Length: 305
Image 1 (cartoon, rainbow, N blue to C red):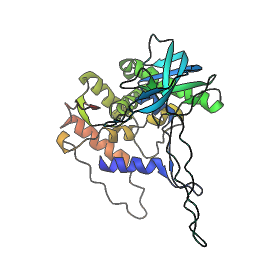
Image 2 (tube, rainbow, N blue to C red; image 1 turned 180 degrees about the vertical axis):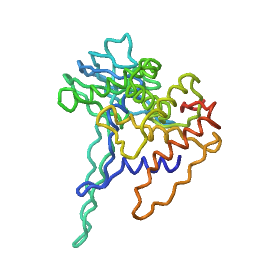
Image 3 (cartoon, one colour; image 1 turned 180 degrees about the horizontal axis):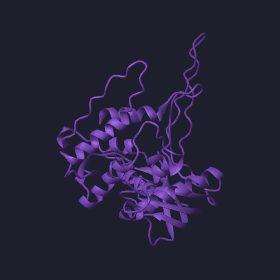
Image 4 (spheres, rainbow, N blue to C red; image 1 turned 90 degrees about the vertical axis):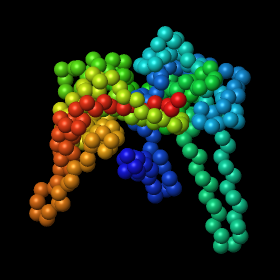
């Protein structure tokens, strides 16, 4: 698991020629998978009075200011059933830090640190795709920092909306998708549900593991086994970025406690075809499912009580 987390960090952190540090925003489908509510809506009002509330992070005690926007829901994709409007609280943008004065001749001034991701300042008239989480104590939803909304009026935004609809359709009825007669649909369903079950809470906190239903677990594992794991497979753009069985396999976090042992890979030899590590991993996974893993049930991460 440690190697997987380090690899994930390496993917989301990058150094550019002009920016000191950049963090990649999660793809829209992943934002939808981890959100409590996914809606398309239009900001119809900004409430005059701000609200003081404790941030949603574990251990937070000091209240911060939220500005509340009222959004008319045009389409509910997940988690906001029977609502016509929804309130979204965002923290007003912080003023940019003042650069430190030069330290004298020949001393280079210190470049100010770029602020981290913040939820955008919502304005009346905006029409967007929102990925939301209910504030634990206040009467509004909030936008996780890595789940920024999508402007659906742009061509790129329209494509992201269509990709999100594919995964929210799975989330609405996972068993139906897992039983589809189309292999691609079953794989998308399996990888979507693995991502949902194995994702940590957006705002942190301790977690524990709980086994999911046996019948759903078997269908997810079956869809992964049926898929092509070879090195030549690359995730397609959009929603299919999650339809990658090798990524889903590593998200499972199998360990010795599950009877899993990482296969020994042969050393690549000069003049020989490259070793297909993915195919060898799949072969070991299939054998494990027929043996020590025959009664294995996927475990989901849940907040620790």
